[in-house]
Image 1: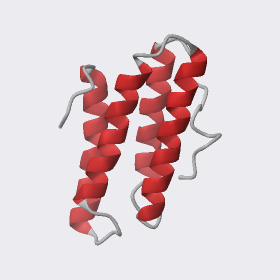
Image 2: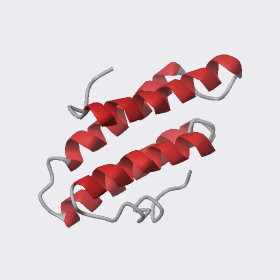
Image 3: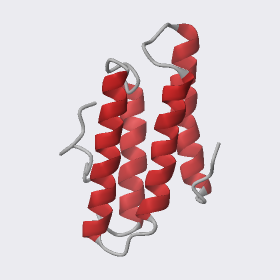
Length: 117
């Protein structure tokens, strides 16, 4: 797996990936390993890109673009890729990175405005 350069985020993203893979191996969801890899890549790019921002407006654009891309990916998978557990994990990653950059509170769900999952 490509790295974010942030070990804690790499662990969180790997947990999302593992959850999706485990579900895929046990059931027959409408997603593939390629979809999981795309989701993982979107999360890695999010962490990398938010750390490159210098202000909240730039960061919120990164958040919005990431959420919209995750929405599209999940739609292509008939809404089965991002279930409750994954939703919580993905939101945590997005919120935590924004919070660490000083753009939002840890209690502020900055994904909610655009999130369809």
